[in-house]
View 1 (cartoon, helix red, strand yellow):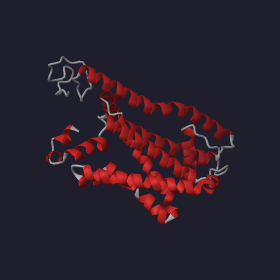
View 2: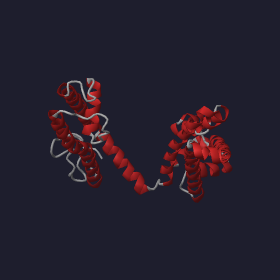
View 3: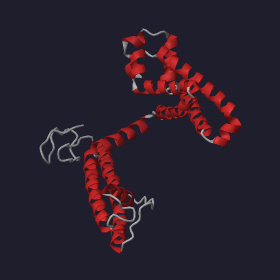
View 4: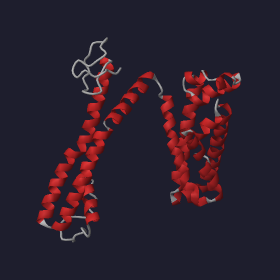
Length: 280
């Protein structure tokens, strides 16, 4: 909000547009928060209406009511989109932004749906707009914690990627092994199907559509199931460690990106462990 206020385009806006901008785009005021809460309720109701319409019995009994409600939702979202363009300091930038495109997609499928009924299920794409609930929670505490979580995910991305690569190799090996053990029978008709079985087994999902019948196959399946419990916990542990490190980095302010040492004096410029320049 402060960055927008510093722009020339915002300063040239009339007081009415500024007031409308604060209500529609921000949640720092009472009016803005009420607007976001009402918008959130409308989005939820519109998505529920589309879901209910997919049920044959409900559509047969309340089809006209749901159709009327969808028309009302479409009109309201269209008016909201027009007002967002009207009060935006940079309308083109808003229209081409992620949320701007989502706002447009929230009404286009609805309009097309009235012309081509087969396209109406795509109206549920407006559920993506529930991301706007984040603006209601845009308090300092939540903003800081969310940034810490995103930083932890970004830092652990390479480790998780390497782990997923290891899992990919593992399921290929296990799937190939089960294909040989079961001799292409019991649903293990090919290596790809066997890999599919290995994935659902190692993740402990276990649909049961493919089941080993040989004793050796069942023994391998048992080992894979037990292995799956420990494998699932590894990504959680990686992210948890990074979150803990992020919290400690925030506490100690200065940290070393090279050796990850965090305990430094407040006026330190270089790491006392490896000599690298400190961040923070």
